[in-house]
Picture 1 (cartoon, rainbow, N blue to C red):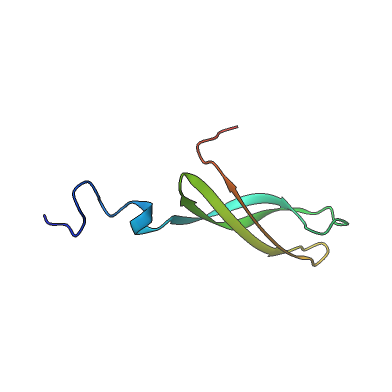
Picture 2: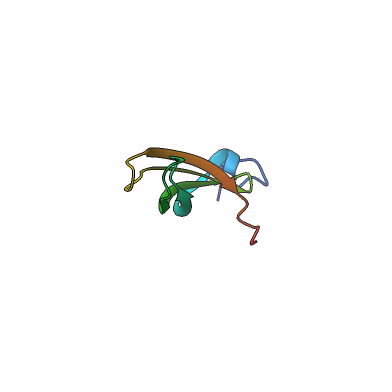
Length: 79
């Protein structure tokens, strides 16, 4: 089977194939300092370079604040 890649390169490397993307959940507080609401917010997660970066956007049901957050974590760290 022939390949368009040089020997030792599969094409599945993140530099070639791009990052893996999936859905996740983060437990986040409302961004309004006067609001005490906390939510499990759906996130879009992207795995690349050994880390997972995530983004979330939601509107607080308690105060109406529009929120957006992003962050990262090491999927191999189980603390």
